[in-house]
Amino acid sequence: MKSFFEQFKERLTIYQLPTYSPDFNPIEKLWKNIKKDEIHLHYFPTFDSLKQKVEDALLHFANRQKDILGLFGHYEESKAA
Image 1 (spheres, rainbow, N blue to C red):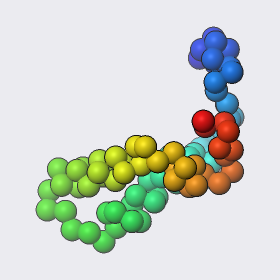
Image 2: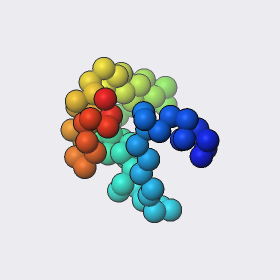
Image 3: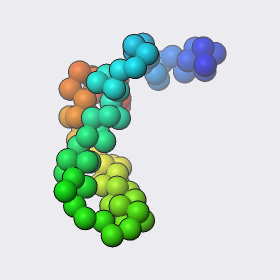
Image 4: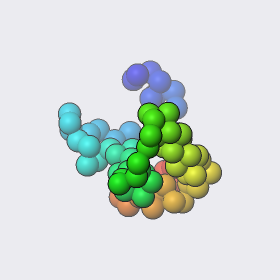
């Protein structure tokens, strides 16, 4: 990994996180948003219907970089662009 990071250091920003730190992991904020808005208190008759709803929710964010960055307030937009 160190050689990969070195090779792409102009394009990457590395954040050293504590061993278990879901509060600092940006994907956790996205999952929380999806759970809250898309699947919480909804009935899914099959596991496949749940998976489809989550996939649809993720596709909603596919080309919405600003919306995703808005979930991660402490990350700078310039670093993700």
